[in-house]
Amino acid sequence: MAQITGKYADFEGLREQAVALRRAGLSRRQIRDRLHVDNNDILNRLLEGEPPPEWTKRPNAKDDLRAKARELRLQGWTYDQIQVELGCSKSSISLWVRDLPKPERKRSYEEAAAIARRGWEAKLRIRDEERQQVKETAEQAIGGLSPRELFLVGVSLYWAEGSKDKPYDRRENVTFVNSDPGVIKVSLAWLDLLGVERERLRYTVMIHETADVAGAECYWADLVGTDLSAFNKTTLKKHSPKTIRKNVGDSYRGCLVIKVLKGADLYRRIEGSWCGIVEAAKSAE
Image (cartoon, rainbow, N blue to C red; front, side):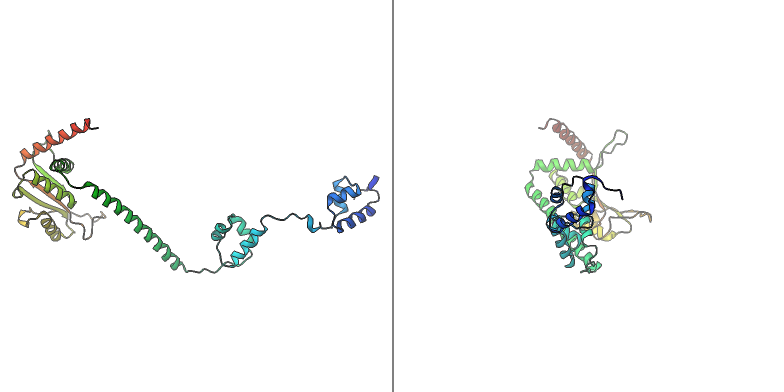
């Protein structure tokens, strides 16, 4: 230890005074001013080993949070729950409660999974209800169809789904295919509007060979309102073992092909009407 000279030469006597003042409850600043000790190193040596008085200790702003976090942990709360309740970080919570035992799991993994599954199923039900509500609102907004509107809808449906004439392959016949029963119903109503007799219609079912062929034939015959005598031989699609089909189940009934006999003139009218729709759409506001 370096020898102290000058006004601090009587170090031991000065230390006795400093310790007495410290134990009397004075702060470092008060002792420094009282003993005229301007050197911090000397002041530290004078007060070495003497704890500060309680009143000089600054309170920790997080002491209350720490105490509350420990209380909640002992009650079995998780870190996430404590974080939401107290608004502090998980890292702080971990430091405050890491010496406490982990709360016992209140639910088994299977029970927790079942609760989560029920919550997800409820969410899906709400989504389905919202989706159905939108559809029903849109359906009600349509109201009735005038003959002109049905005519335009039918022409558009045919041009999207029906066979078309090509310069390199003349096909002036009316044939279309679809798997949607609604499309089939609208198309038949459109053909009725055009004055096409049902006796001029021929039907063909197209379906995978592994499906319920007989059931599909009866379904389509019932939908179009005729017996199977108006149906051509069903076209069976070969099923590759490497292909994973998604169109399976009771709702799968293949597609229905509708052909109008002696339909060349009708086809020309349809094509002309479609060209008229395209031209009118160009100038539509």
